Amino acid sequence: MGRTRIPLPALAVSSVVLVTTALAFVFFVAPNDQSLGFSQRIFYFHVSIAFAAYACFICGAWQALRHLWKRDPRADLASYVCVHQGLIFGTMVLITGSIWAKVAWGRWWIWSEDELVLFLVLYLFYCAYFMLRFSVDPGPQRANLSAVYALFGVVLIPVSFSAIRLARAYFHPQVFTLHGPNFGGWILVTYCMAQAAMLVLAYTLYRLEIGGKRLDVRLRRLREALA
Amino acid sequence: MTYVRDVGALARKDLLLELRARDTLPAMLLFVAAIFVVFHFALPGTPSKLETTGFLWVAILFTALLGLGRAFVPEREQRTMDGLVLAPCDRSAIWLAKSLATLAFLAAAEVVALPLYALFFHGLGGAAVAAVILADLGICAVGTFLGAMAVVTRARDLLLPLLFLPLAMPIVVGAVGATVVDSPGRYLGFLALYDLLFAVVCWASFEYVVAE
View (cartoon, rainbow over the protein chains, first blue to last red):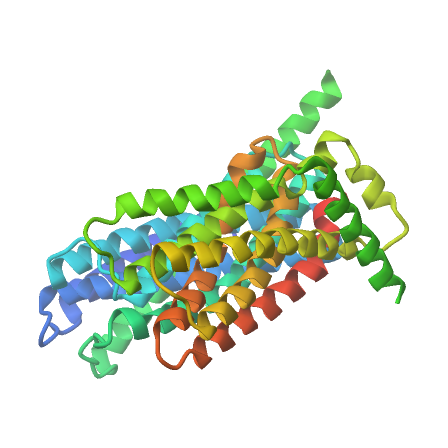
């Protein structure tokens, strides 16, 4: 409450600037990949969006923990908004991953890409989070159930990841390696730029959504006071 | 020590209830037999051992879901959940007792289902039985927890599979892996780790599911 926060307009401007710069870097500065060519550039966004989505889910779980621990009513809303943003970014991960699979392997879906499969599982998990949340009346119980389920999510991320790696052994004996690009120079700069852009964008969207949600809550309270 | 006694009393109540009403177990048995028949017709030709193993795990998972969906229904129908929450025992004892009762039903269903599977399709080895035991622990621990969550929602039974299946994916990986590969140690270890991890999480957070 007492903390000073970066004003939303400043955040919005910086995310516009960062995303534009990242796009410019991805298209004009980063070198072409030797084997995958131009299409490999989608990876800068695919990976950075995935990390932004993880950050959202982890942040959501952290807020959930705060809610359970400190009974902070604002934390429940924050946790929900984090998960919501994570789901939006997760959708983008699936879409970019699918496009990339089509270009690289000629198919829209590829089960041998661990990251993509993990996101599908997480996506289903967090969709169920929304089903759960909207199936309980607003109140402490809804906050508790959502918080506990969001916490399950962060446990599920590493568990699912290792499960998918384990499943490889009996599904795909051959391991697809992504022709390890030497991660340096302009590739690294471009990647960091895209990652920063996505994180700032996620934070901006989070602030925008939570601002709106808090306004809703205040409006409802005022209406109730007037009624 | 009182904790163990509480868990024992609560689990005994569920088992006694089942013994008298016979709601869950016959349904699970019938379901698993019916699903094997459906599988036979869903698998054209002579399915390999690999394929039917996958189906076995689908059958186990869905049969478990049937039992898990029922776990908290008597408490809701007879409005005894408030009484349980108010009882002078640790709330996690409710979860543990329910998990044990569901585990008993699932194990009973599998005692019939596994020989039936062996009869209809292919025989099962020792590793598969170990995988079944370890997977059952995880399924019941997580599933009962989610069942308690689902039962307080408006969607009720509809919600449990949605909540449960993404979380059950690692169980399926561990179980199928342990059943089909030659050295199942890694997969069994993974299943045990999953059980332990989620049991601790469920045990620690059940309080928040039932109390406001």
